[in-house]
Length: 344
Image (cartoon, rainbow, N blue to C red):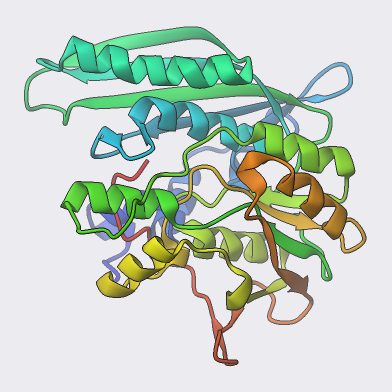
């Protein structure tokens, strides 16, 4: 897809919300409107998965917010309610924060079925009960028929961290761990939305990852974390490389991808590395701790497919190099955006 004119001369397109290069350009330009971006700790201009505020005593308060517009609202493996809860809590988790509380804003189209709304909110409530997180405040608005496509959920999460983990902390030599198979959520949404023929079953991986992350943090050596949502593995790795000012080399043979996801991606001509995950984390781990962290992750049900897929290097700063299955090397570029709009 061709790159459009600069933001100041053009209109918003769907790729501006898809987690890739165009979204980054948009956010960078809009950030110029906000001179005050921090209350201490990690501020808005860090463009991390959340922000942190220094507390008077030991620890950091971590805050994140997100809006959820997935289509379809119900998909194999979950629905917009489960997605909203997990997406918000996982943004806290990859900053090293134990989730404590969440807010919920509902924007509902007139005529939306109350039975479906209850089903969606029951899914969200189930995640909060599973993780011990309280829903502490919220808001509801109703839009006219045709003014909204069904339902939008807005969530804000609050957590507490002893030490905030950044996505900019990679150092040369750090090992890169992915906690499971990639591309599951994006492909599940794509298959459900388009009614694609699938051999076997493709389900979203949407799940709260704090229990798994907590295991890794207890071992130590975690230098950087990110959850590969919009733009998938490719976007997350490129962001980490750029922000950390290191190169990253990953081995294609080590990247876990379900065969059903790989086959459908090949048929459609898209990369599974650009498809969103909603229950995985990318971790940078110091070399001396990597194997111990990997063992701890694999002991959790969500981490059984975890792998060391590569390492940070001092060369090729800001770039991600993919060692292909056939022995070649190429850059794994930052995607313009996730190939599917409205995936989360």
